[in-house]
Image (cartoon, rainbow, N blue to C red; front, top):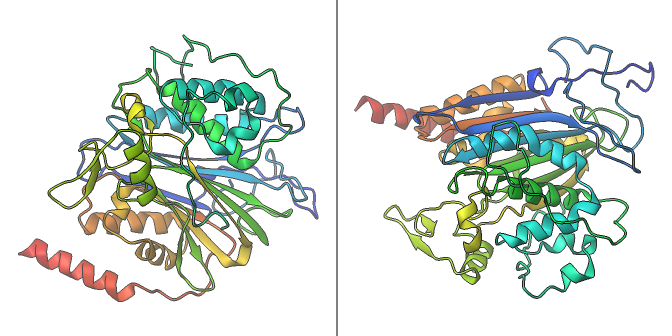
Length: 411
C-alpha cells in the first residue's frame, strides 16, 4: 500500500522482468531438472492464519492498484525466492517448487516434536536451533545424536506412495504433537529449519530412494514501509542445502558476497560430520572429492537411502541486514553456472544489464558459451541499489575466457 495514497499493489514476481529475471536451459543434458519459485509470503501471526499471496509483482510499465496490500511499518513485505537442482529425476524438485513455500509459511511451533521425531527416526540428527521448541523427553532422548556445531562465517550478514509433482497424500501420520506449551513465535531460522525437515520427511519413501534435490531459499524482507526494491532497510535470510548458490552484489565495492556455501565433501565441517556418520570420501580421477564414491553433495532433500550415512536436509541459515542502497541485486544460480564462473564473474556479468531478466538471460548464455555441461539456471532479484555505478572487476578475464573458448572450438 502506498503510504501517501493508500494504494495497494498487485504483485507477480515471476512475471515482472524489471524486478525478477529468470532464465533456465537444459544445457547439454536430455532433461532440465532445475526448478525455481518466487512468491510473496504472509506468515501466521498471533494465532491468525494468513495465506500466501500468490499474486506475486507488477508488470513492466506500471503498478496496478488492486489486490496486493503492502502493510506499513516494520513488518513490510516478505518475499520468497528459491532455486532447486534435482537429481535422479525432477520429482523431488517439482514437489519442493510447489510446496516448500507453503511449509515455510504455515509451520507451527506445536509441530516441532512431531517433525523432529519423524525426521530422526529415518536417520536425521537433532537440530540445535530447534531444541528450545522441543519437549524435555525428546531433548534428553539418548538414542539420537546431535549434529556438530556448524559455524556459518556469514551468520551475521507423512509418507505417501502415490506421488505427484504437486501433492502428497498422507498414508502414515506424523507422531503426536508435543503436549508442552508452544513457543509463541518462531524465529525465521526455526521456521525455515522446520519447513525443510518436514518436507524432507514427506519425501522419504514417496519417490525413488536416489531421487533428491538441492534447495537455496532467500527470504527478502523490507524493514520499513516500502517494497523490497526501494526499501531503505533490507533484511535477507538464506536457507541452503546442496550446491546451488545465493550471491549478493555489494554496491560500495561492486564485489560478490556469498550468502551460501557449497555442501561438498571437501568442506571441513561436512567431511568431519560425514566421517562420524560412517560414510567415506574418495577422490575421483578428476581430483574431485566424492561422498560414498559418487555423491558431489553432502546435504540434500530426498535421497532417502542415504540418510543413515549422513546425507541431511538440515539447512544452513545465514542472515544479513543492510542499507537498501548498498544492495544491488541477488543472484540465485544452479551449479551449471558456478561450474564455469566464479561468484565475482557472475555478479559482474549481471550488473552491466538494464533489467534483471536481461541479466539472467545473458548470464545463462555466457555459461553455455563457456561450455557448461549441466542444466543452467539463474534468477536475478532487483534490490534498491540496482543500476548504481560499480566497477566491473572481471571484464578482461571474461573477455579472455570467451575468446579462448571460441579459438578452441575453431581448432
